[in-house]
Amino acid sequence: MARVLILGGGFGGVIAAQRLAEQLGDDHQITLVSRSRWFVFHPALVRLAFGKCEREDVSFNLRHTMLSERVNFIEAEVARIDPVERKVTIAHGEVEGRLPYDYLIFALGRRLATERITGFYEHAHHLLSVEKALRFGKAVSEFHEGRAVIGQCSGARLPVPVYETAFALSRLLEERGERDRARITIVSPDPPGLQLDDCEVTIALRKALAAHDIEFRPDFPIDRVTPGAATTSNGHGINFNLLMLLPPFQGSAAATHLGITNEESYINVDSAMHVVGVERMYAVGDCVNFSGPKMGHMAVRQAEVAATNLAAEIEGHLPVSRYSHDLRMVIDEGGGESMYVHKDIWTNEPANVRQGRFWSWAKRAHEKYWEAAHS
Ligand SMILES: Cc1cc2nc3c(=O)[nH]c(=O)nc-3n(C[C@H](O)[C@H](O)[C@H](O)COP(=O)(O)OP(=O)(O)OC[C@H]3O[C@@H](n4cnc5c(N)ncnc54)[C@H](O)[C@@H]3O)c2cc1C
View 1: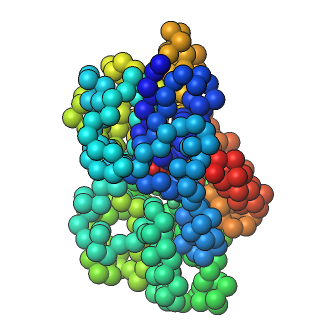
View 2: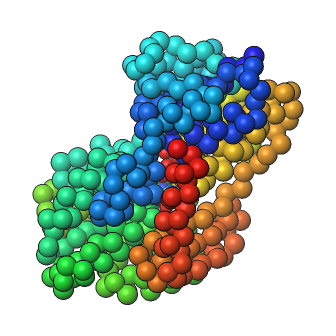
């Protein structure tokens, strides 16, 4: 019997657990540990902030899902891992102490390094969790005029909610008849291009921004926020009445100081999703050291690859599945400027970009499908 431990109850962890439950016989034990029993469907958080759905629509109870998949679920905080002794230290939760394993899948996502931006905690909104999205939504409901600044700091590897927030705000202000009284500015350390360096993507985005009269300020790496103003490391400033800013991302603290990460604490893996230099350990999702934006569909694909290879390894076989770093992104503008982008990040071939109302509908339909299929 093999004891398989999966850390993290997000896209990566949940899919890895479901795929392993399908592929491994009942004699193997699968356990998933996560700090919360609630799975959160992050792509819907912009819609939550703008009152287009409810808290119950964006989350489901993992304990029920996992038990029906014959996976043990433990609600607890992972402190660190010891890949030599094959033990995981649990800081607190339903169990405490050191959990032994034979095979490990690390899927703890990324950490928000808000401490790197002075004043972020006190003066900036973000929407990367249910609570923060609801709090930002309250600030949006009180915003009627002035300047809204929406943006991301250096190291924030997630352009989708920045654009979707700007578009949703523009539409809301139009509905309220207040669009003329407000200015919307996107700030970014990068040019407008979804961190992809692709001219088709840039052209499509510029068109969508122009349609909503949304300004874009590139080369704007914010490193300090005070009440009503944000400033960059190169001395530029911008005043705001409403600020939604994505903080820098970093890999999970539970994987640092083990010699398996890069300088931003992202875990080094090969295309079989095997952690480089460590036996019997896989990593998937936002925690891995791959270039470009960090996306849920990548975590899902990586989890499928890791689960298939882990099941093969238990049977004494070599890896049978490989991951290729494809990006498939939908920016929901709420109407005809909604955009689908497909790009192979490793080959850097020109992106396939499509624009139209269909993609807005498709993104919402996908949300409903995901919840129905996994909750
Ligand atoms: C607002 C927003 C919009 C997005 N839009 C899109 C989109 O349109 N398309 C798309 O593909 N992706 C989108 N994403 C990105 C996508 O949500 C992430 O890439 C995805 O969630 C990564 O999955 P993951 O399993 O690696 O990490 P996560 O989903 O972050 O899961 C990590 C899990 O580990 C748990 N955990 C973390 N640390 C510990 C610890 N120490 N102990 C115990 N448990 C721990 C967490 O509670 C969580 O359950 C969006 C994200 C956000 C926030």
